[in-house]
Length: 300
Image (cartoon, rainbow, N blue to C red; front, side, top):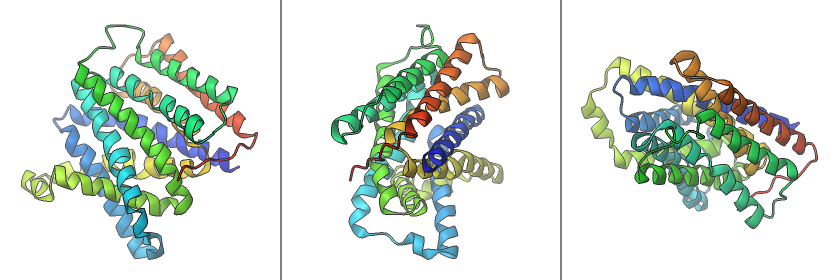
C-alpha cells in the first residue's frame, strides 16, 4: 500500500510540474525574468511552511546540526541547482532540447543505485526506463533535427540540471528516513532560499518595487510549482526507491506538452500521444514491479 501511495504522490507532483511549466511560460511572455520566478517560488514556499509549522507544531522544526552539510548539498545543488540550470538551458537553447537532456537523470540515478547502492536491476525497471526516455523523445519531437538544436552552453546547462535532479533524488532520499517529510522539505527549501539570497539579495528585491499583481504571480507559481508538488514528491520519495521515483517524474514533460496544446496553442500529434502512452506504460510497469516487495534502499 505504501508503494501505491508513493506512486500516486509522485505522479501528482509530476502532473503539477507539467502544468506549472505552461503557466511559467505564460508568465515569461509577460516579461518576468526566469531567475526571479525561480527564487521567489522557493523563498515564498519556505516562508509559508516555516511559519505554519512554527505556529502549529514546532517539534517538526527540530533538526540535528550534524545534518546541516547534507541539507545544504541537497538544497543548493539538488533543489536550487535543478531549477536554475533548467531555466538557463531553456534560455540558451529551447524547451525540447532542455527537457530531453535533463531527463537523462533517470539513467544517472538508476546507474548509481545499481552500482553503489546494490539495488537490483529488474526487467521491469529497465523496460520502464527505456519506455520513459523513448516516450520523451517522441513527446518533445526529438526525432526532428530542427527541434533539437542549441548552443553548447545550453546543452551543458541541461546536463547540469540532470545532475542536480539526480542529487535531489539520491541524497534527498536518505533525509526522508531521518526526518518527517515536512522537516526535511522545510530545511531543503531553506537551504535553497539562503543560496538565492546571495545571488539576488533581499535589498535587490525591495529595490525592484514589485506591484501587488507581481506578488500575486509569485504566490501562484510558488504554490503550483514548489509548495504542493515538492511536498507530494518528497512524500513519494519516502515510500519508493529513488530510481523508480525519477522514472515516474518523466510524466512531467508529457503533461507540459499536453498543457501547452490545451492552453497555449501547442501541437499534439499521433507521435506525441504515443510518447505519452509510453511514459504512462512505464509507470504502470514500475507499479507492478513494486508488488514484489523489493526493499527501499537508502544511501547515507
